[in-house]
Each structure stands twice: as C-alpha cells, then as structure tokens.
Amino acid sequence: MVMHAWKRPITALGCVLAVISVVALSACSASAPTDTPGAQATKIKLGFSAWPGWFPWQVAQEQGLFAKNNVDVEVQYFDSYTDSLNALATGAIDANSQTLNDTLSSVSGGAKETVVLANDNSTGNDKIIAREGIASVADLRGKKVAVEQGTVDHYLLLLALSAANLTKDDIELVPLTTDAAAAAFVAGQVDAVGAFAPFTTTALQRPGSRAVATSAEFPGAIPDHLVVTESLAANRPDDVQKLVNTWFDTISWIRDNKEAAYAIMAKRAGVSVDDYRTYDAGTTIFTRQQNVDAFTPGTTPAHLNYQAGQIADFLVTTGLVDERPALDGLLNDQFVKAVPE
Image (tube, rainbow, N blue to C red; front, side, top):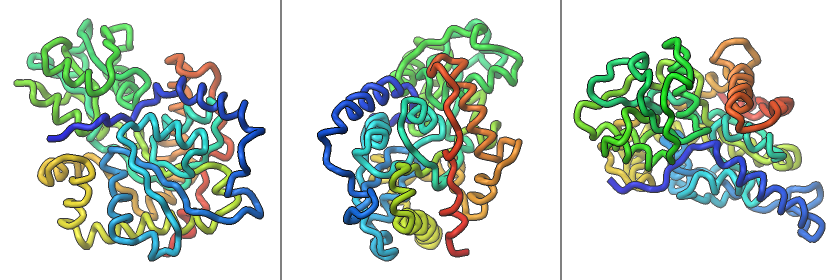
C-alpha cells in the first residue's frame, strides 16, 4: 500500500492563524477577489484530500460531472490536509472538504467559512486500536496511547474514555502525528493508538491488536463537509448550488458504476481496490434527505448544530482555542434543500 501524508487534524489552527494574519496585513495591496459583486465569475477552486468520503470528487472530475452541471471547477488534491485548511482559510481556494472540527478551528482563527453540504459521517473508519491483552477502553487506564492532539481521533478518544468513566488524566497520552502514531504502535512503543483509515490498516498489522472503540459507537460525532468561503456562498450562490448538485450526481454515478468508481478512488488514494473496499462501511455517505435532516436544528448527535456545540466545547477544554467559536451563520442548508429530489 502506498501511504501518503493523510491527515484530518485540527492542530493546524496555529498555522491557519499565522497565515490569516499575514493575509490581513497584505490585504490592501491585494487585487480584488473574483467573487465580489460585479467581478467576472471565474472557476471555483475546490480542494480535497485523503479521506474515503472525499474521493468522490475525483470521480466527478474524471467523469465530467462538473461540466454536466455547467460549473467551471478546478479540482486541487492536497497530499497534506493541513495545507488544504490553510488554503481555504486564506482564500487560496474557494471550497474544501474538511471536518466540522477543523472548520470551527479556522472560524476561531478569523476565517469566514460556511458549511454547505455534509459529505459523510465516519461510522467506523476512525478507531482506537489497542495491543494484545487490552480488551476494552477501561483497560487503557495507566497505558500509553498515541494520538495526534486536536485531531478528530483525539476527540474520539476522549468520547470513548468518558463512556468508560475515565478521563484524559487516566492515560498517558503520547502526542504524535497520525502516521507516526500508527508506526509507534506497530513497533510496540505504545499500548494503543487513535487513527483513521488508512492508518488503521497499518496499526492493525500489529499481531493481536484490535479496535476497542470506533466512530461507529458515537453516531454523528465525526461529520465531514464541503465548506466554502462566505463570499462565494453570498456572491455566487448559483455556482455553489451547481457544485452541491454535482456531488449528488457523483454519488448516483458511483452507485451505478461501483467497480469503475472504486478503481478511480483507489488510484487517487494510492491503495488497492480491495483495500479501498474495506473502508466502505466505515464511511456513511449522506443522501440528500440525510443532509436535510442533519442541517435541521436539534438537540441530538444527529443534528449538526448540536455537534458543532459539542466540538466547540472540546476545542476550548483542550486549550486549542481561547474562546468558544461563534456558530451563527456556520451552517447553511439552502443548497441541500434546493437539490432536485
């Protein structure tokens, strides 16, 4: 398996803040953005990186589905997920697929971003994996657990510990990047690891290892989205609508041409088709109706406003941000509601 620098972290906040500051200082000399009123519309720059719920964008590009929806899109694949977050936060791209955690981090840093589509929920592809002899999360007490601080898997670890009546103080957290954490676990340097696919595949190569908790046990906790700049949503809503429509056309094409789609997505991921198939159940791609339901305000984990509040609290309590990010205007359901049924 070819392994890339696959990350879904929110530890990029410091980088985002620094870059935003530079951009703000140089704004006076910058040329006017093309998505301001009266400016000539240009192609939408859409970023994505390695996660099973985002590889459909590669299918959309190769099958000409953007053109079918009459929207000019330049797809940009990022080997580094952190780079994609910075690119959206600073306006280098117009749209990006990223986690709700990361979006809230960027908003905390001053970025103006809007969630317009729920790509998927992680339903098992994020895991806490432990060595032989550790049968449950409760058995992690006093053990070394490697995880990338601030990532969605750090969040998953805290959720799992809480469910087992433990806290972060009951374990020895070893902060490592996700790829290094998986490697350290396989090498026997730590007792457990928090990771996402494909690093879960790497971690499970350790003999006797097993998942003691997964995102499947915490429905809705790790949602992934299409996020656009506030200016794109406000000034070019028709193009954003076409972009969202293209997503659902792509999911339909994948459903009808599964083997061809797997080949495209596995190639982009740098894994075999068989490996890619193993990620299927662990990522639940949302239908239009699931999108509408998720965007509807509510008080359960199935609702994005609820999850945003939970994640905002997580960012503050872990010290990743100083103040709870504002949630007003973060979630925009107009586009998923307007998708043809």
